[in-house]
Amino acid sequence: MISPKSNRRFFHVASLSFGLFWFGVTSQDKADAETRAADSTPVNVIMLMSDDQGWGDVGFNGNDDIHTPNLDAMAAGGMRMDRFYAAAPLCSPTRGSCLTGRYPFRYGILAAHTGGMRVGETTIPELLKKKGYRSGFFGKWHVGWVKPDDVGSRGFYSPPSHHGYDHYFATTSAVPTWNPTVTPEGWGRWGNEEGEPWKGGLPYVQDGNEVAENLTGDDSRIIMDRVIPFIEANQDQPFLATVWFHAPHEPVVAGDEYKKRYKKFGKSRQNYYGCITAMDEQIGRLRTKLRELGIEKQTLVLFCSDNGPADGLAKKGVASAGSFQGHKHTMYEGGLLVPACAEWPGVIPAGTATDVRCSTVDLLPTIANACQVESAIKSSLPIDGINLMPLLTKKVKTQERELFFGYRRLQGGIDGKAIISGNWKLLQEAKKGGKIRLFDLSEDPYEENDLAATSPERLSVLSQKLAEIEASCQRSRDGADYRY
Image 1: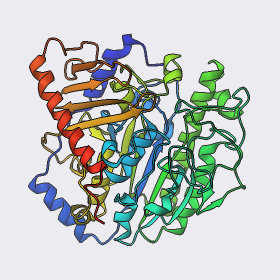
Image 2: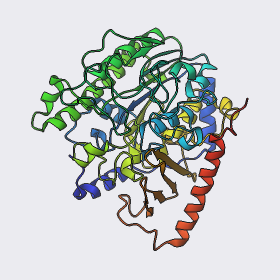
Image 3: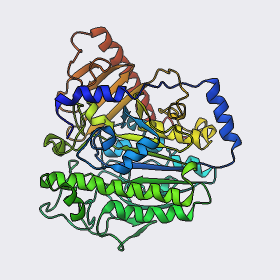
Image 4: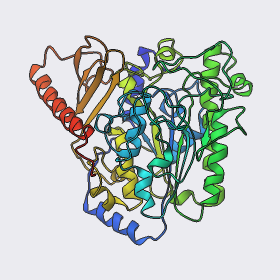
């Protein structure tokens, strides 16, 4: 396990030893872009995301207890991203940021099970459709209900097909990670931290119809059983596959064959570790299929989690944010930093890593650049992310950027929010009377020394920046970005 404070120096030094690259566009970048444009071979894109997997819950970030050989191989085959942030420390807001390149406070999904993706937003599959891409979504949607007659009190029907996907196999939100139609023993009528009970039944919908077949066993395998045929059917044309696993979100359950691999641990770790290994196995299955089809060199594969580890599991020491403070629902690094890597053989140099701060809002502009649809972004909505291709290909210099994070805790309507500007981070805790804290991440990456009282000028500058971003997001949320 890698969460003890005694290991903090190892994490910081180990990540820095892989080198630090800076983002920027040079004349060489332009030449590379022209070369890609001249190449008529389209780029396939696969977006992989785990659910509530902490920064420290993967082998490539130093965890020796959890077996993730396929994710480790993917990170070794491309770039490991040591400072990759979710746009929020909560699932639904982050998921929307992946699709739109925009902050959650801008498009209005502030918490789980609230609202849904607005049709006025421009998503990655909608951009790629203009270039003839086929797109498929698989797994946990959670930015709108997927059943029109099963909408909760805080959202609306907004399935993947409303946002550019040609095909989908999706659930609205969480399901058990083993036998997704069966309530796990001991869970009873499970209620998650957002207060929404899991009801069992038939949670998956495929292109508008409930699915009853092939829903037993490991949920990650169930999802991948739908992904592989989609890729096989579209191997001769450009495609986008968005694969959002449920693992390792609660109720987290692993099959016996996976729990046996962790028999030296207690029951909670057997299920948690086993569930992650089962997901990793399916990612390996996907990578193998790309190579069997001979399309791995024309396929960009991106992986990240949606937020830090679940509150309870992190507090028990089962799930890990590595050495970082915090967990899901907190604005500290442990709630926002997630494991991430990118692989594109022949384009992204193998065995590389970066400490440059990146975010889920960067996925849309990065994919748009790789797939040569950047011109469509300019006529779209304001985008908060940046193109990471110069970073991923190591042809970069420096570029200043700021990152904003936020979500709403529904009890009391309290917002947690944070801004990182340079190496400085200001955060407001997401709780009643939540304090405002200030950290210098270059000197204090684990947020142990609050400088809010001793650096009033810096606090004032970042507070003003935060207020400006919030005001801009409020205008967007109120409809200023949409054309009617």
